[in-house]
Length: 208
Image (cartoon, rainbow, N blue to C red; front, top):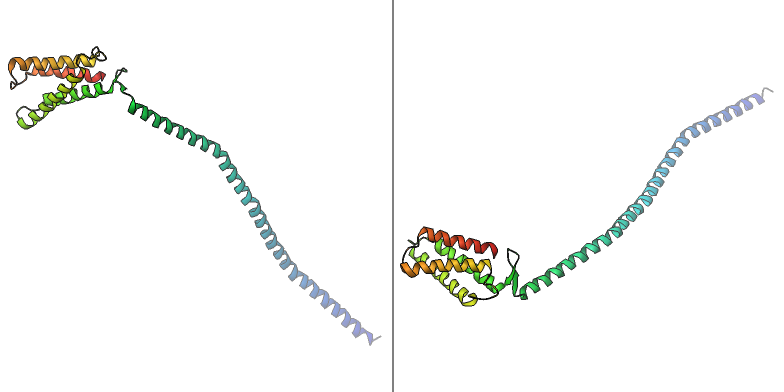
């Protein structure tokens, strides 16, 4: 009996040591396994998130673009139509012999151009300092030329003779011609006559 006790005790000690070692091994290994599983889970979750979010974002982006396509196409079509209408309108205006005035009346472009030129040049001539002989003569010559062209092309024309612009311009020209015919071509224009003519020019310009 005494010979077997050491063996049993040794066996018990061995198994106890093995058990302890097993417990220690389990204690040390299990946390490592837990950490490895957590990292794998995190990797899987990240992969799932990426695989799920990226296609979802792409889906939203594509859908947004597709949703905007009809609106963009409509805007493009409207822009093209407006551009075409603008071009057509410009061509019509270019070849149209008539033009709408500030008063809303439709009159010949040639008349409006000539009448506006008379208003511009005659006003400049009246406002020019007569003491500056060079400028005064230059503006006076330009006014005479525009008046000559205007009267030569539109005097007594039935299409414009009843227009207010025509009446005012005729009045201004007659006042100017009446004064110089009496006082002479080199006489200084009195301020009251100058003011009256400028008023007539302003009234004509308002309806041109």
